[in-house]
Length: 245
Length: 245
DNA sequence: ACGTTGAGCTTTACGCTGTAAGGTGTCAAG
DNA sequence: CTTGACACCTTACAGCGTAAAGCTCAACGT
Image 1: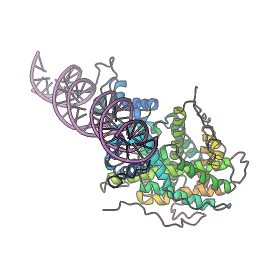
Image 2: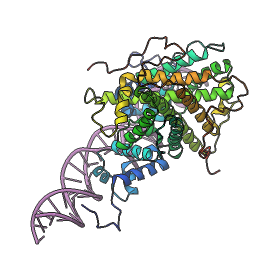
Image 3: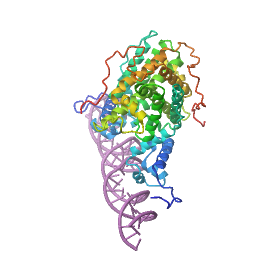
Image 4: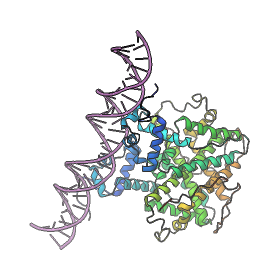
C-alpha cells in the first residue's frame, strides 16, 4: 500500500492535497474558475484522477468547506459562566476573517449545510461553550442560529464587496452621492457602507447580538422566549414542512 | 416600434417575461437547472434570442434578483420616531418569506451586490425610515448592515435546510442523536435546529437585534459606538482596502 | 519465480454549457 | 417598392462534469 516509488517525481494525490489546491485555485480565479481539468493540471494529473478520491465535484467542494472550517483557530473553551461572550466574539471574528482571506470561496461556507466531521466538531465546541455557560439547549440553538446567521450574512456581504472592489480594480470606485439624485437616503448612508467602514459595522452588529444574549435569563427549561415587543402580528408563516407526504 | 404583429402566435420577449420564467425555472429545477437553452425552450425561442435582451447570463441573474426584491411588499413608511421597529420586523419577515418561496434562488439575493434600481429603491425606503426615526446616517447604515446580514444569513440557512429536506425526500430525516455519539452538544441542540424550529429561531435573533437597536441613543452625530464590552482586544483586521494599485 | 490483483492514473467519449459570428425573416418608415 | 432595423435563428467552438474502459506497476499468494 505504501507508495515508495515515484515520490521524487510526484508527491501522490490525497484528499487533503486536492482540497488545498482547489482552495488556492478558487482564491485565485474564483469559484467558476475551479474545474476538474484545471485543478488536475495544477496537480500534474488528468481530470479524471480526482474521481478516485472524490465521488463528484460536490464532494470536493465539501472538502474545501471542511478545510476552511479547519482554518479557524479555536481558543480554549471557557467552562465558567461568563467566558462565552469573548469566546463567541473571537470565533465570530475568525469566521469573518475567512471571508477576508477567501472571498471567492466564502459562499460555499454560507450556502452549504455542514456535512463533514470538522464542521460538526466546530458546532460541538460552540454548543459546549453555550451549554457550559448555563444556557438551555433551546437557547443555545437559537443563539447559534442568530450569531451564525449574522456572521454568514455579514461575511457574504464583505466577500461580495471585496470581489466587486477587485473587479472594478481602481476604476470608478464609490462615487458616493451625486450619481443617484433620486436616492438621497442611500447617498447619505453610502459612506458608512463603503469598504473602509465594514469592520465597524460588523462589530456593531455583533455587539448588538452579544449584549442581547447577555441579557437573557439563564434556564435549562427555556420555556418560551417572549421579548419586549409582542409576537409578530401578521399571519405566521407556515413552518414549511414539506407539503406532500 | 410596436409589436402588433404575431401577438397571437407568441407574446414577444421582454426582459420581464424572461426574468420571470427564469425564476420559475430556478424554483423548479434549481439554480444549476437554469441554462440559456432550457430557458429559451420554455419561452418558445432559441437560446441566443435571450442575448438580444441581456448582454450575458449574469445580467439575467441580476434581473432575477430585481424581480425578487420587487416581490417584497413595502408597507407604508412610518415617519414618526417609533414606527421603525415594526416596520423593520415586517420587512425582515417578508425578506425571509422570499427564502421560503424561492429557496433555490435565494443565494442570488444574498450573494450578489445590489445593482439595479429596484434594489436601490428598497434600500432607499429602509434608509428613509431609519433616518426619519432619528438615527444618524452612520447608525442607519450600521443598522441596515446588521439586520441585513442577519436576514441574509438566516434566509440562506433556511433555504439550505429546505433544499436538503427536498433532496432527501422523506428518507433518513433528522436522526437527531444516537447517530453522533461523539458530539453530545450537537445532539442536544439538534431538535431546536430542525426544520420546524426555524421560525422561532428567526424571531429570536431578530428580536435580539431590534431590542438592541431600540436601546441606541439617537443622535445625528453618532460619534462613536462603544458598547458594554471593550473593543475587540485582538489585533484588528486590516480594513482590507485593496493591497496594491 | 510467476501469475493475480487492484490501486492510481489516463484515454476516450458523450451530452451539456455560455456565447461569438453571421444569417434570415418580418415589419414600419421613407 | 425599397430600405433598414429589429428580433430571432443557425452554426460553431471551447470548455464543462463525468461514465466507461484501458493502462501501468508495486504488492502478494503460491
